[in-house]
Length: 229
Length: 151
Image 1 (cartoon, helix red, strand yellow):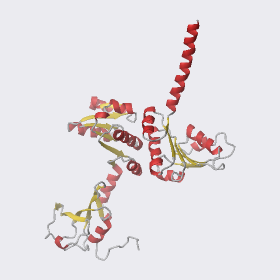
Image 2 (image 1 turned 45 degrees about the horizontal axis):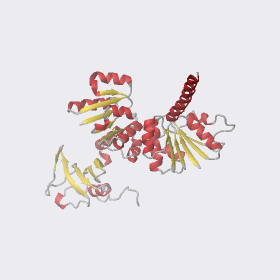
Image 3 (image 1 turned 45 degrees about the vertical axis):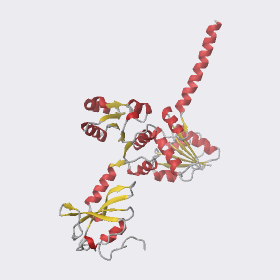
Image 4 (image 1 turned 180 degrees about the vertical axis):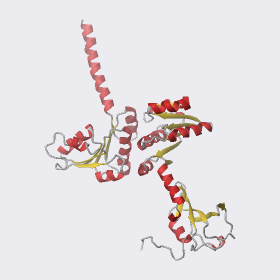
C-alpha cells in the first residue's frame, strides 16, 4: 500500500517506521523545518518538508495514488481538513485521523471523518477496564454495524452465578461469547456453570447495556440508581 | 439581523464594529480577551454599552460557540488567523446549525477555491490582492508601451 502520514511527531515517526518495516511505501509530511531535518536523517526520502494543508504539497507527495492518508498532527483542525480533502478531493479510500482534544470528536463526526483515534479516549477505556467499579465496560464499538462487545465482572451476589449457560435467558439482542476465569478465557458451552469472579464477554445491540447490567447484576438491583423513577 | 463573528483580529473587529453601527445585533468570539479592546477602537462608548457581545473562547469550543449564539445567528463569519480553523468552524455553522449565511475567510487561494466549489462561501483576500496588483501593473505596462510607441 502507498500510505501518506501527515505529522512527524512521535506518533507519525514511529508509525512510519513500523509501516516501512511491513514493506509499505510511506511518505511522511512535516511542516516544521527542524523536526523534518531530524527525522530525515533516519527516514531519508520517505519524508517531505511542507504544510500538508496546502493542496500542492499533498499533490507533490502523490496523494492521487495514495491508498491511505493518516493525519496525526497536534492540530485537530489540520487533521480534519487534510482528511476531508484527501477523501473528497483526491478520492483516497482510507483515512485515519488523530483527535487531540476529545471535545473535538463531534466535529470529526459531523464532517464524516472516521475512523478517528483519540489517545485520551483510549486511556480512559483502559482506566475503565482496570477499575472494576465501573461494572460494564465497552471493549469494542462498531457503530456502522450497530454492535458492541462488552465485558462485565460477575459479583458474588449476581443473579446468574451458579446457573448453567443453557438455563440463562439472555436479554434479546445480546449473546454470551466468552468467559474469562482464573486468567484464562474460554467459549462457554451449555453445561458451563457461571462462577463469581467470572468476567463475561458479550456482544449486543447498542442501547442494551442497562438491560444486560440488570440481568448480570445482583438480585433485586434491577433499575436501582438509574434515577428514572 | 444577528451576526456572529468568530476571530476578532483586524478584519473581524472592523466588520463587527461596522455592522453594529449599522444597527445589527453583533456577537464576537475570540480566544484572546485582549482583542476586546480592538472592538472599541474609534468608539465613544463601550462595546457592550452599544449592545455588542463578546465571548472568550477558541473557535471549535462548542460551549463558547453556543454562548456566543451559533444556534440562533442569521449570519456567521469565520475570520480567525487560521485557514483550517475557519474552514472547519464554518462547516459546523453550516452543517450542524444550518446558519443561512456563512462566510469563511481563507488566505490560501487553492483551499478557498476548492471549498467554494464544495458549497462553502469563501472570501480570499490573497486572491483579491493578486488581482488588484496585476490590474495596476497591467495599466502601468500599457502606459509604458504607449509611451514607448509614441516616443
